[in-house]
View 1: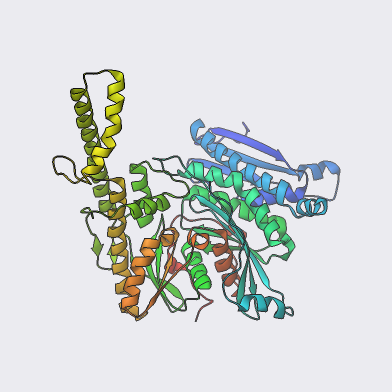
View 2: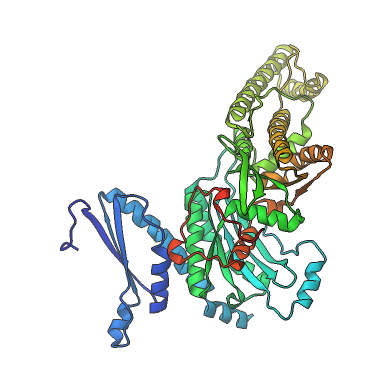
Length: 110
Length: 413
């Protein structure tokens, strides 16, 4: 993080969120990155490493959603990250309860 | 808290027949997510391509109710929507007896509305669209209200009065757009009523407007003087609210004065023994009744009931006036009332009197469809989807400002 320090955006935070599968990691990325950051004082980037058919280590990498936040002040950083966490929480809850396999499993129980 | 609304079928006999007959071509299903204000609604609708009939498979709603004297703030409302989304979606799917695979599209409210609640529902709708691999359709909230009103009432080409907590517009259709003939210049009529409910500190459950309507029914002995603010085709409500607030302040002072006077009387007459004082206090309400709306100084006693009555009569008269002018302009004798304030029966009654004089009629729906709901988003979204419209994921944002006439109504001639 120190390496790519931006003097005008000194407050930085990187969040890594592990998902069970590369599919879910990429869905979270796509659902969350649509809404632009409202303040020009905050910059952010989303990454998921593309899934490779190679080693399991690489596949584990593609399950991780990585978000880099940079802001002018710690306050701006906190506000932006808090709001991101709330959205992330909703995305994960929707995945846990409304993915097709979850619904199908529930139906068969009933 | 409001109760979830049971699923229902739209009126009209053809719908049930259509279900049996249209076995050849599969009906299309749309799921709609609405959360532009304090209601979170998810509904599922079916369109039969052969009969052109719609069927409502589920229409579930949960309302964020703030304490008396307060309004709903964007942050708290968004939090409400996030915490109820999964539950409401599960119920909607269960009631519709559908699996996500059966759906054709996921519709969500793109705007207009409050930013944070809109965004929270859009995030969830996007996640559903990605999980289930179904296209997204962004819907204009106002168009949702209009299309659902037309579908339920069967009104062909009405002048539409769209009145809610966030919007006040008189709309007529021409050349594939819903054109705005008149609108509020400041706050929405529903906002005026909601905020007056806050001034009186009456309950927001089930809705502040509903409680004002109930109080207004008990009033009506006097029509208090309030400004009447129609400006051409437009109207203004903020000055009326300010005047009503001033009257409410005067009412409180008056109540305090009366209480003081009565206390003086009891204290003066009774030497003080406790038993005596309570006996006197019981007499007071009777004495008040005798004065019948007049205090001893012969001043008019203002009651919350009269205030609600006067406010409703004034603002509804304004709405009827601008609607009548639009009808004369367009040459239509049908009025369709949509939006949350549209379930007010006094507004429907006043509009009905005006329409009857013009040889026309009023079309209104009940609270299931008047008040914000998911099914209207599903319906308008599915209509757009059937013309080939989709919202690409990258463009599936929300916007607080999204005018009714920005939408190309491709599905009408």
